[in-house]
Amino acid sequence: MGVDRIPESGLAPATLVSRIVGEDECVIGADLGGTKIAAGAVDSRGAIILRHEATSPAADGERMVSTLMEMISSSADAARSEGFNVMAVGIGAAGFILHDDGILIESPNIAWSDVPLRRLAAEATSLPAFLDNDANAAAAGEHFAGVCQGVDDFVYLTLGTGIGGGIFINGKIYRGYRGTAAEPGHITIDPEGPLCGCGRKGCLEAMASGTALEREAARLAEENPGSLLLEMTGGDTELITGEMVSAAAERGDPAALGAFTYVASSLGLGIVNLMHLFDPEMVVLGGGVSRSGHLLMDELNKYVADHGIPALTEGTTIALSALGGDAGLVGAAAMAWEGIGGLA
Image (tube, rainbow, N blue to C red):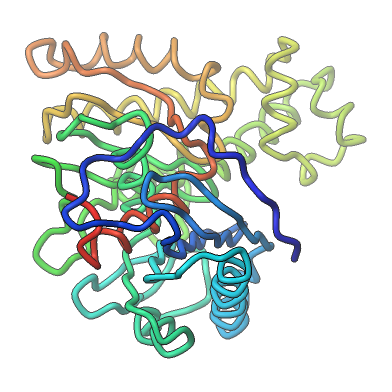
């Protein structure tokens, strides 16, 4: 795993700090998803100083933990070698989190459960450590240094292997009674719909995630022998990836466009429900699918206009993440800064 230096340009300044933060101080942020693990050093303005990245060994929980700890330690060592004082560690992990206890209960897409990640990170680094759901972390990243700076009421959806969410109310992450709130991926959209990784049918995650996009594209390609997707995969629809679906849709392939329409309609229903519940100023889309967000936005806005109650949805903006794939890493770092009193 190499270390890439990242220029500071493009990330806006953070909010006021509640203590003096030295220019030589940083924290380590780590973002664990079903596809990749990213860890790196982040300064008090939200700028990434350096990063490590690796493929997630999602089928092996023990390797997930050991890889994470190795990457956190390597990031801290690399930051120190550049002259930085490492202050804390923040982790955003895919799964259901007991926030106050620092424990990952389980994850629908990763083979691990009952993992005390906060304690393990603190022991591995001898630093204060903080843990939250990966989508909560990504939401915190957008609030810290992304599209939601200055926006105190918003819903963040991360669209990747699964669908996660983070909800900000009055400028704070809403975690609920147990700390497991904001799992919009497991809102039921269709009780008779496709099986979700959580074991239930018709969840938003099963119908609007990157996995759902690939599944629907494969189904439609098989029904359309002239589909560009069949040409791209040599006829083997099991090889279809989200990137292929996006590329084919850009070239007007009906199967790929149909898959985006399917995802947009399911996602639109979920967004309408979230707007009706929380009255957010913004709904922000992040994660892998959002990189092709322009293919979704027209359909999403139309769906919300057609199915939302105007008095409850008008004035709410649907926007794409400003931080993209870095939102989770930056947000995990934001949680670490907040945890040690470095953010107002």
